[in-house]
Amino acid sequence: MPEIIDQLAELTGLRDRDTLDVSLALALRDLLAPELVAVHRVVGEPGDERWQTRARLVPSDITATADTTYFDNGTLPALAEQALWQDCLVNNHTVSVDGDPAVTLFAMPAESGASGVVEVHTSQAIGADVIRLVKGVLRIYRNVHALLDYSERDTLTGLLNRKSFDETFYKMVALGMQASQQLDVADPERRLAVPVRYWLGVIDIDHFKQVNDTFGHLIGDEVLLLLSRVMRGCFRHSDRLYRFGGEEFVVLLRCPTEEDAHAAMERFRVAVREYKFPQVNHVTISVGFTDLRPGDTPSSAVERADKAVYHAKHHGRDQVCSHSVLVSEGLVAPDNRDSDVEFF
Image (cartoon, rainbow, N blue to C red; front, side):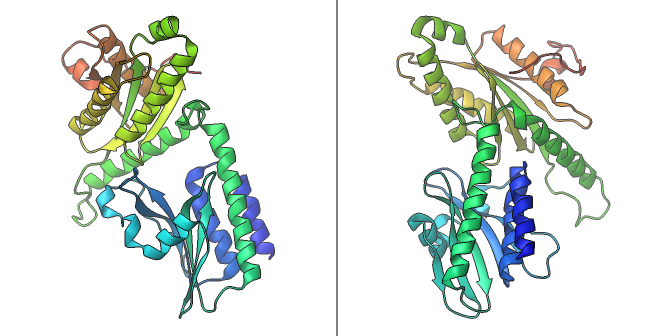
């Protein structure tokens, strides 16, 4: 029991949502001494939901294993492919299956319904008292997640806010450097078949001040909220979407090539242009993007993307501009100095 208290203390002290599922799996392993404990989350858009394993532990594991954060939806099992997991999730209840091992599935509580399933294999069926204890641990986990959402998400749109941007940015820069090193190794089995690159896009709503001046700030807020929903529908679950303040949004994503990154930004631009907003009818966006480079800082990368946005806004708006393309065409001067632009 002291071990579970230690694990709960660690869980409630975490401020990195990427490690929460691992900490939960460790806490349940200490509590139950199971043959296996795994945390499975539902990801993807409605109609194409998939199961993503966020943490998996067996007794001999030192660290948890997990599915990759970046994935093509087709590589993960569809919701219906795991019927017991789906039953547990949809009905938000505990499922017990006798056998060797005995399998117990716990619904992971969320603000509404369940967000995933915890799978536990034990040598014997888990008793009612232990089931209640596990559910208590899961409620603590939900509360920690809710606190992180409260502090790290924009209250209007639900997108991530500026507070959580820097940490994710540096993680992506580090991952990009690791990937570039793997491209150069001599061993073919360790060499990446497809280069991994990360990109930052800055998105600005065109003439948004006119929207507020003409229709009022309540309608302006409605435009921001609806645009954030379009944004979620256009980008992948693994992409990081932010509202930095006002009408400015930011996306961090992974694509193999600049053409792929441009296509993702262009898909979003077209979706916004074609969306019919109540009262306002139609709005457009200007987008600038850049790759993340070794040694990048958040301010230097945002500055490059901002220059591309500035060019787009002064050359017709409603378009996507790549910083590197603008530099190669002599339309923007190469300048990687840290930006003094502040977001709030």
